[in-house]
Each structure stands twice: as C-alpha cells, then as structure tokens.
Length: 394
Image (cartoon, rainbow, N blue to C red; front, top):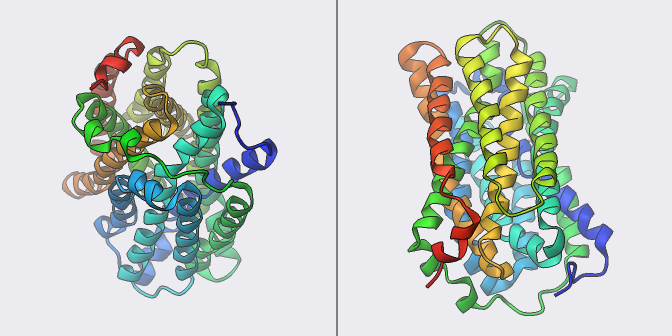
C-alpha cells in the first residue's frame, strides 16, 4: 500500500486541518463566556460543568459505535454526517433560551465530534501510513489550535454584538466548511471495513485496550477540567472574561504547538515512553503551579499544562495506532481507547466543581490532577513496543 492512496495530497492535508480545527472550540468557548451564560440562564457551577461533562461522555459512548458505523456506511459517509451534526448543533446555539437547551446543543455537537474522532484516525493511517507520526501531530495540533481559536475569538465575537449566543453559534461556519471539503476530498470507500478485521469484541477482552483507555481518560480529564474551569478560576481572582479567555487561548495554543512538535521529535523508533514522561512532567508543573502559586506566573502554568496535555494526546493516539498494522483494526483500537477514555474524562470537571463547592476554591481540583499525573506516569511504563503484538494477540 502506498503512503497515500489518494493522489490529491494537499487537499487531504487541508481536510485534516479543517476537521481538526472544529473538534474543540465548542468546549473552550464556554469558559470565557461563563459569566454571561450564568447570568442569563441561572446555571450554577455544577450545571455549567454539564456543558463539558455531557458532550465528553457522549464522545465516549458514541466512539464505541465508530467501527460499526464505518463498517455499515463507510468512513466517508460517517465523516460527512458527523460534521453535518456538528454544524446543526452550533447553529442551534444561536436560538437557545434555557440551560437545558444549551446542554442539549452541547450533547448534539459531542455526538458529531465522537464519530469524527472514532473514524478519522483510521482514515489517516490508511492515507498517510508512512508519515503517521507527523500527520497525527498535525491533526492533534489543529485540534488543540481550534480550542485556542474558540477561547480567544468567542468572547470577542460575543462582545461585538449578539452576546454569548453568537459567541457560541458562529462555529457553524467552520463546521460547514469542513463538511464541504470532506465531501469533495475524501475518496469513496472502495469497500467497507471487514468485520473480522476490526475485532472489537476481541479488543475489549484485552487488558491493553483498558490500559490505553485509562491512561488516555485520566490525562484528558485534566484537559476537560482546564477548559471548563481555568477561565472561571481566574475570573474568581478578579480577571475579566476577555483576559481569562486570552489565558485559555494561550493554553490551547501551547497544546497545538506541542502536539505538532512532540510527534515529530518522537518519530524515530517506536518507543514513545520517554517523550510521554516528559509531557507528564510538564502537566505536573502546570497543575502544581495552579494549585499552590496561581498568581505567581499564570501564563507559565497555563502554557506548561497545555503543552503537556497536547503532546500527551498526540503521542497516546500514535501509541494506540502503532499497536496494529491494519488501518481498520488500528482505528478500532483508537476508537475504543477514546470511547472509554472520554467517558472517564467527562467526570473530571464535575468532580472539580464538587470539590470547589466543598472547599470554596479550585486548588483541590488542581491537586487532584497532580495526583493523577503521578499515577499515569507509573502506568505508562507498561507501554513498551515489544509488548504490542503479545498484548493484542489472539
């Protein structure tokens, strides 16, 4: 198989960028706009956490359906349908009038994102097999960069007129653009994935699949907490919506840069553990600073935790895809990892909100994630390349 089956390489790269940019802004936009949303809807902190918890939980649940959906209708149709769902959810946010409606739109977008995340890694492995580390880095970087765009532009757009509804609803435009490009660029599926190749049931019986889920979920719990509460955390310390949004954007931008850089640095050889441990050290630095010295160097803490989270996301995706050679099977493993992982990650903002209610601040939540980083550091030792074949054999 050639490294790119489809001859139009640049259009495929454009699609990678556009799709990645659409997968996180709907989450990162809500934190900077939290003040206006709470004032209009009466949402409490725990209710606000549902804007992250619900879509991330659905991102987990529907990720499990990705392999079956690809087998039934093909990867191309699944991608286009998912992007259409995301566009519809963003458009609906222009007209919401209650907390329940806003959470429902978050759920709708989360379903679309889940299907994209479940199907897209297999597509990338199929078309960019020889450059997988670099392409996964590009995909992860644009995914995180999209989070920066949402955090920075949404409060600006809201301030220009229309309030928080427009600050959330404008994301229909990039989603529609990604859907159009995917429809034009993705080749029609030559054949639907072989169900024997995907072997979802077999993968779910392997401890390695669950180890990947746990590592991915615990780290992304840090991400979901940061995007939900970093801006409100500093707003409680007297920052404005715009300034806290800029800090969140800097965090997301550092994610994107690290997600692009680390896979390129780690592309030689298959053992990514040293690089993963470095990403965890960056996360530990950021969470320790937020928990104990938040006003000393806010930008440093945000950039450290963002770089660690972004690079860890990209490298863990690559590790999952490295386990299996066949694109459909590797994509199924990545989908299952994301499914269980996002279900676990969805709980983190809610637990942090609960800790805030009990302690009166966010320090306990940041401390919780510091402890989680230590746990994942230990678990990562098991992800040695020589164990890949044995871990999923059978």
